[in-house]
Image (cartoon, rainbow, N blue to C red; front, side, top):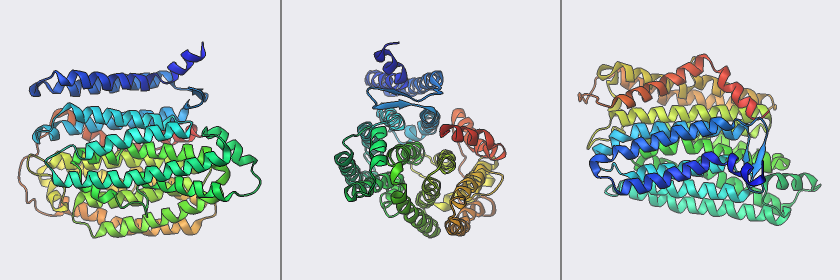
Length: 478
């Protein structure tokens, strides 16, 4: 096999996805509004083919392509599977919502697929340049998606905040990369790691570069104190866009942290571990405490996200295979839970009504016992109640932290998790013990019913049989 063929074979899923985006963009131009379902079907069929192309790779070894810019390994294969499935679910949830608001346009799918392409590039990046290119492709798609409903002033405001703060964070990340390049003479992650290992003394410029990169990475994940964009963007965005932002990009963000910190800056673990400890504690404290005061469901879930990011940081700061596998497990589980919770919000929404207040969940059990049960499973999982998968996710990261002799940090995490249970139980109380204020019938398409049910039941199934997913996460770092 020639070098060119090897390069192409490794990047076939990404190249097909790019061709799919261009096809959807061109086809959509010639469609009338009543034919717009074709765009949706074409996007979903394309995502299924993308999954099959990823499945064909299943690399046992670590293969590089494009002169080290791109890598294919177990980690990239597993995470690509996850993000493609999550985006496909978002598209299923979105169709009726977009139709009801007269914004069922091909641009939504084009932006969503471009964002997915950016995520896949980030996941397979082996070079600071390809990480940055993938991140910017994702970020620019998200900025446009947040402002997608042009008649909504809240969405426009959220998009502007997201764009300005996102640009600052991207600039800091790029500045940190330039400092690391100045000290190591390379942007290739493997070569950077080798250069750092050869340095005997700590380098102040390298530490500054690391600080700037950690700031950029923390912003993209929504960790405190770089979380200020997250509640406003979650609240202001259309619910379908919020479901997109809350799920798949978190998985890509995790991959980016692994590539940059674990693989590239592993020799400086003592330096970045301390930063992650501070951000993890602050995220868990602020996320769980401030969520209690929220009356808007989307804002409450935004602060819940911040607390979950704190838990992901716990696994990452362990700095070993066990910690990385636990953090990966937690990230995948969180993305599933977040998507399911926003799926229920989309289910309850209808034309002229967003269903994004906590009180909108009142009496859900009277209106739809099945979807009240699905929301119950997801909320229990977020709170870490067995036998849901959220319990095992929390247990895995706590075990990783205890094994590096940071028992105090595990105790802090447990304490604030218990505080977090309060606002989760409030949701269950509203669904099961309050009378419904809104008596309107819950209507949704068959595909959404099936997808949302599968989403919720997967959280329960993975809780009863967590070993399969955990073994995949461990194998990714073997």
